[in-house]
Image (cartoon, rainbow, N blue to C red; front, side, top):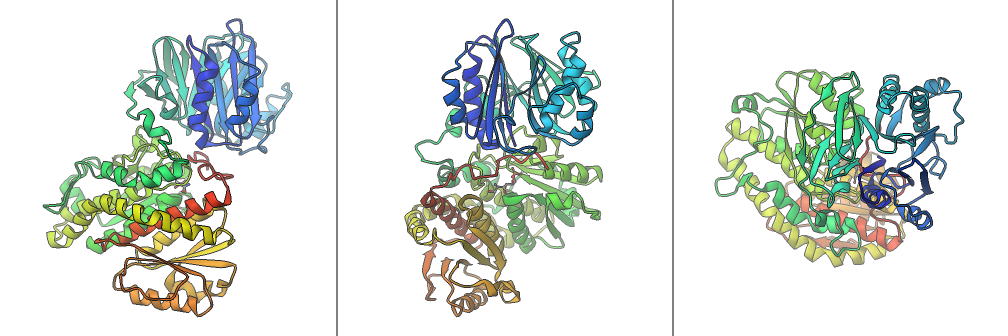
Length: 608
Ligand code: M6R
C-alpha cells in the first residue's frame, strides 16, 4: 500500500521518480506526488489527485533538471484522496513521503503545535515531528529522523529530504518495505525492486528498525539505536519484460495467460513424475521433523487464503494423521489459538508484505512453531523472516487481482504436503497420481486457456448486466467457488458470493431470482451427482446457471456450460478456476472498468 521512490545522483530525478511511480502504481492510485531539489535547495513540488497520468500532465509545465528527489503514490488511509492529502508533505525545510500508519498521530500532533497543518494525514504529523528535532538544520537530518521515529507507534517506510541539505535522502522502515538500489554515482530507492529494474541490479533490502542516509555515492545504515549495520547487497533477478504488458491490453489477461509458464517455474527441479516423487529444498525440514508433523496451520489473506483452503482439502486426502487448519490472517492474529505440539505453519503470500500475514508469522514464530513461507516476491519481508520456504517463482504479479500466484501457491503447498506424506511413508501408489497430474498441469492449463478464452468472453457479454452472482461448489470445488466470487467482485464490482452446495438450502437458496446468475463448479468425482442435484434445486427456482464441468456426459439444461476437456481428475478444479479468472476479466472489460487497478484496492496490503 502506497509506493515510495527516491533518487540521488547525476541524472534527472523527475524522470526516475515518475517512471518508478508508474511501476509502483499497483500499490495505490488515489493520488501521487514528487518533490525534487535543485543544487541550491530550491524545491519543486508537484502533486495530483488520481492516477500518475494526472501528475504527468502537471509535470509537463514544471520540468526541472534537479538530480535529487522523492515521490509517492497513495492508497488513502487518513484523509480522502485529494491533492492536499497527497505526499510529499512539507514541514519547514523538510519534505517527507510515508507508507504505513502512524497510530499515535493525534498524540504526536500536540507536540508539533507550531506547525500549520495542510492535510488530514497522519504522515504530515511525522514530517512536523522530524522538523521539530531538525531545528532548521542545526542537527543532522538522520538524527532528527531517529529522534522522531523513537516516538512513533505504527508502521512506516519513509523517505525524507531537506532543502538545507540537497544531497542526501534519509530513509527508514518499520513494517513497510524499502529497497535501496546501488548504482554508479547514483542511489535509488523504491518500495519494491520492480521500480529499480533497468537502472541497477544491486539492491539492499532495508530491515525493520533500520534507518539509512543515502547520497549519490554512499549508503550508511544503522539501527534506531545507532548500531551500524553492514549492508548486504543482493542481485535483482527480475527483468524488464516481466513487468511489461508484452502485447496484452491488460496485466490481468497477461498474467492469466502466463500460467502455463509460471507454473513450470514453480515446478522446476521439484517434481519427478516417473518416480512419483517431489523434492522441495527450501523448507529445510529433516525427514524426522516431517514425519512428526501432526498439525498444519495455513495462514493467508484473500486469494492466498483460498489457495490455502484448497491445498488443505488436497493434503488431507493423501496425508494420514494430519489436521489442517487454514486461517484468515487478520482474524488469526487476534485469536488466542492454541497451537499443539508437532505443528508447522505455512505462511502464504504473493507479495510477502501483507501486514496481517506478517503479524501472524511473527506471533506463530514466537510460540516456537516452525514457519514455512509460500511466497512469490523474492527478498520480501515474509520470505526473509520465515524459518524456511518455497518461492513460487511466478514472476511479478502486477494486476491487483491475483491469478497466477493462486495456481502456483496451491501446487507449492500440495508439494509440501506430498513431502510430508513421503516422509511419513505413504505408499507411492497413493502419491504418484498427484505427482503425475502436477507434472501435466502446465500443459493442461495451456489447453484450457486456449479453448475456453473466446467461449468465456461470449458468456461474459451475456452476464455483465447482472448486479449479483452466486458461486457454488463442494469439496475441492468449494474454495474454487470462493476464489471465483472474489475475483469477480474485486474487478467488476458485481456483488458475488460463494457457498458450498450443501449450504444452499440452509439459507442462500432464498436469493435465487432474476437479479442473480449462478456459477456452478461440477468436477467429475464421487460428489458430482450430489452437486448436480443441488443445481437442479437452483434450476427449479428459475436460476440463471453457468455450469463449469469436466464431465463429458453433462446434460443438465442450464443457460451455459463451459466444458473442460482434460485428462486430469484430481486437479480439474484448478482448470475450472481459469474460467473464473477469464469471466471476471471479460465481464469487467465489457463494463469498461479499470481491470488492473480496481477502485479502493491496492496490490500490496501493508497496513492492517
Ligand atoms: O500478497 P498477498 O498474497 O499476501 O495478498 C493477499 C491478498 O491481499 C490478495 O490475495 C488479494 O485478495 C487479491 N487482490 C485477490 O485477487
